[in-house]
Image 1 (cartoon, helix red, strand yellow):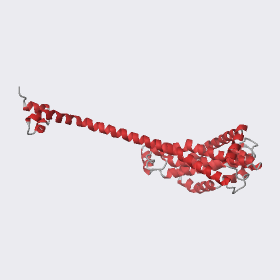
Image 2 (image 1 turned 120 degrees about the horizontal axis):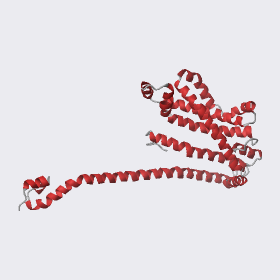
Image 3 (image 1 turned 90 degrees about the vertical axis):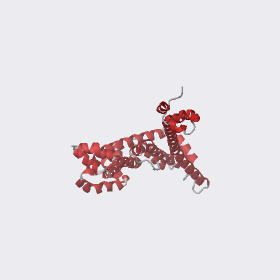
Image 4 (image 1 turned 180 degrees about the vertical axis):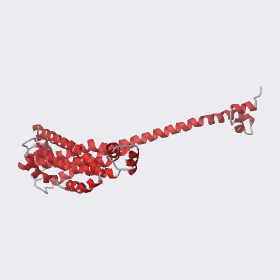
Length: 326
C-alpha cells in the first residue's frame, strides 16, 4: 500500500523538506534527517559534558602545578642559598670558626638533637610563643573592635597603638625584669607588648575597609552594637584581621627570642633564645647558627602550616585569589 504523505509528514517532521525532488531518496533520507534532528540535543549535551570534563582536568592540573610550585620553589631557593653559603666558606673569605659551613652546622645541630637540647628548646619556645600569642589575641580583638568603631577613642589612642607597634619589643625587657624579676611573667609581658599593637592595628585596618552598606542594613534589621560588631563588622574585616594576626605572631615570636636571650638565659626554661645565648657564651658558632636556623625554621613552619592556608581559603571564598601570585 502506498504511504500516505500526510501521515508521513506528521510522523517524521522535516522528512518532506529533506526528500526534495527525488521521491526515491526521500524514503531513506527522511529518517536520517529526522534522526539527526532528534540526536542534536544529545550531541550538544555530550559536547558540554566533554568541555566540562576538560575544564575540570585543566583546573586539577593547574592546582597540582601550583601545589608543586609551592613546595619546589622554596626548596630550590634554600638549595641555592646553601650552595652560595658553602661557596663562601670554601673560598675562605672568613675564618671557618667565625663562619662555619653548612655541614659543620648540621653536625652541631645533630649533636644538640642527640643530647635532647634541640627538642627541649623548640618545645619550650613554642609553648611560650603560642600561649603568649593566644593571650594577645584575646586582649587585642575586643580592643580593636572598640577602637575601630568608636571614633573619639580611636583618635585618642590610635597614635599610641601605632607608636607601640614600631617600638622594638626588646626595649621592654629591662622594665619587665625590674617589674617581674627573672620569671616567666617577664617573657609573657614582652610577648604581649610585641603582638597586641599589631593585631589591633590589623583589625582596625580591616574595619576601615568594611562597606558602609553592611552597617546600614544591620541597623535597619535591628542589630544591637554587640551583634553589629561580632556578626557583621568582624566577619567583614577578616582579611585585615588575619593580616594583623599574621604580623602579631611574627612580632610575638621575635619578642620571645629577645626575652629568652636577655631575661631567661636558661635559668627558667631552656628555649631557643637560651640556646642562642649559650652558643654566644661558649663562642660556638655552630650552636649559634643551629639556633638561628631552628628559629627561622619554626617561624616558616607556622607561617606555611597555619597562616598561609587560612589566608588562601579566606581570599578564595571571597573571590580575591584569582589572578594572584599565591
